[in-house]
Amino acid sequence: MLRRTLISVLIGSWLVVAASAQVTSRSTPLTHDQTKERGVVVVVEEVVAYGTPQKPLYEVSYEYKAKGRKTVFIREGPGTVAAEGKFKYFATALNLTFLDAPDGTLLATVPLEITSVPAGRPSETLPGESEFPSAGRNTDWHGSSVEFKPHLNKILDSMGLGYAFCSTENQCIITPYKVINFPAQHGEKGHVAIKITYIEDNGGLHLRVYAKTQEKLSHGSWLDPDDEDVPKAADVFVSQLLKQLGSAR
Image (cartoon, rainbow, N blue to C red; front, side):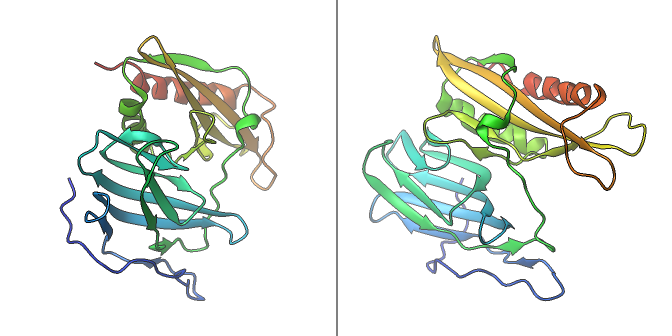
């Protein structure tokens, strides 16, 4: 529920990180209220800046409510979702756009203000959609995509996985690389990125999970793994993810 005090002031400029590279932050949620216009209220919890000015990436966390509606469409994000909900994902622009349908009437454009810049601006690398292998693992969700998206958001957040939505044409998400543990012989490191596609099928969704793995020596570059330990560790991780993603009702 949206319980925070409404704040009328919106839009700020980039918060500047001091020379000591300390974290800059704002503790008060930022609320955008267009109740009088289209019945949309959005509470922005956090906007964390990653990447570079040339290739920005923001992790956005917000709640929203569109009064008098069953669904809304959030552009360049989750798409069609319930009229009330909560999401946390990576975006490339400092705004949220709400419509009544994919090609429908504009309900609200919400400008975003950066709330924190982590010290050193750590990189969050998102592989491209086409960089994943063609083979994946399957499960099913017995519900609609509108119901699935907040479920997916909750599961990925509980596993410490940020994610970004794919292009508008494709129903999928991609995560940054996550470190995985495996029995390294010479100080190698491994990590895995995940792509999840979801396609409507017989009243439910068919899910397919793809894993892209890489490894490197302590001072080397990330490369495709040359042994089976990293893919095996990634497969265990995918199995855990599938258990939580599948089924419903």
